[in-house]
Image (cartoon, rainbow, N blue to C red; front, side):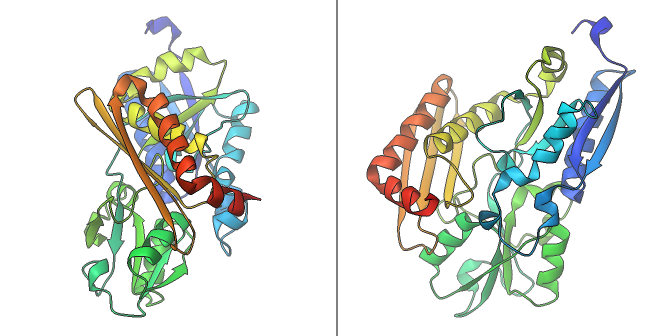
Length: 312
């Protein structure tokens, strides 16, 4: 990048949770290392999704509640970029916004956390498992019908505190968040994707800006991770084809080996009574097309009926 085009200051809009601030500081540190002389400030914000904790996301409007205030800060010029967990980003961005870069992915799988038990298989009948995700809940109910699944909201530290207070026998969290917060020692086991298919984009960081800021796209290019971008592109294309929503238990997980990509997806009834799974493989350069095809495949195999019932 032409050094004459590097700004002297950049502002990142971020949620104020510990994990969100870690992510923003991580991006800030990378940028300041790449561009000596650049100062990066962080504008911490509390979003509507952070304020409303008494009900599940599926009942209050979904993941977009975590990004709207940050996008407003970009529109008003109070910030240049916003850093998000990709799993919190709606698959359709509002007009005028774009994803400028997708950072390297941390472990994308779900983690089992408990003070008393080593894994889901060790939980006794009636044990209480906390999760905020319909996706996790549906898969738990399908595979472990003897467990009691209860809602769990709040940031990572709040959820761990509720577990430690004995409100739950175990909780399910994204492994990536625990690892990034140096809380990996709380993970008792990583749940295989076959038992808990992750959320679309889980473990990846997204950097958003106004669509006209081509200068920022060039500035952020070194932070874009090619393999992660390919995987997340496939996952989000599948979710978009399915009309992805927090009201629907939906999972997607892509992996790369050489030039090949494999994408697994599912749509489920919230109670786990029906889970429609599928996968597709192909060349990594066709990531978006493969995602669309898998989404349509799931629709044809019955996801359409589930989606129609849950979103109307």
